[in-house]
Length: 112
Length: 114
Image (cartoon, rainbow over all chains, first blue to last red; front, side, top):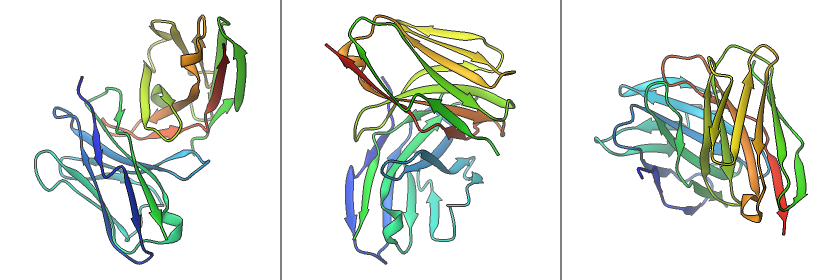
């Protein structure tokens, strides 16, 4: 069964460092997303990406965040200068047109 | 602004019981609604997707209903098993292009006791 894969599963970084979270969406999907879940809180939408550009982004997705689809299979989320409050589980998701979204297993980011 | 609420926050039932999880949303202009399961420290597993034109959707022991006009969805789990223990999340997909974005509830943590 096709699945969304994310790497790494856990990343620890120092405050102020740049991190790149990687995702391989389901191959025939056209829409890609990043969500995050701070411990004990709701899953929050960050950004959606379609046709090689951002479709929509939330207030959380400020200039410190960027997304990229560098090749035909990968989808990345970059945080330029991490803050303590960026510590969360980050989920990548993908969907087809008018279909359900499938989520990866997440990357737990810990900023120290 | 869409708000999604799930009641109860936690539920503990004995094995074999049928149960209902509730989800409500404030903006009825949703495109579809999706139910997920989340195990501790894990990702989100899609359970059911209900399009806005549908009233219900079934998969095995799970049945989800949608009433857009009242802003409610329910997830019915029949003959619960200890393996059903997890957090169940509902998410409303807002009408936006063709992909959309999901607005999540806070989840119902279900514990099924043997």
